[in-house]
Image 1 (cartoon, rainbow, N blue to C red):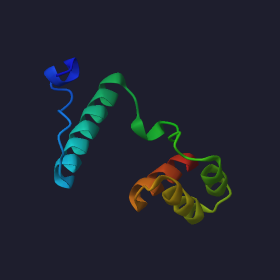
Image 2: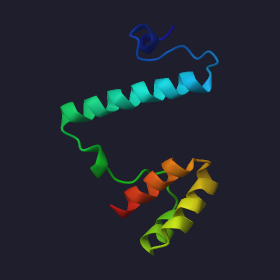
Image 3: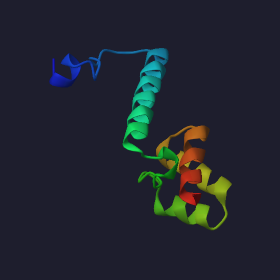
Length: 92
């Protein structure tokens, strides 16, 4: 068992169901949000994720938002909501 697991920061890696993973992601997102508040960081003002390709950025910045989302989903395998959030972040 690693130090992070001993501190309760990470769970051991056994196989998990989708519901367990969704719960774990929700817990981690809440922790990040709280850390951001304490640090005075506005998560909505962060730069777009590095996972967006030049092609996706070009499409988004040229006003082709739907095409950018479609290409981003094809490139990353993300769902619609996640891909849209990434493209929206480019436009902020």
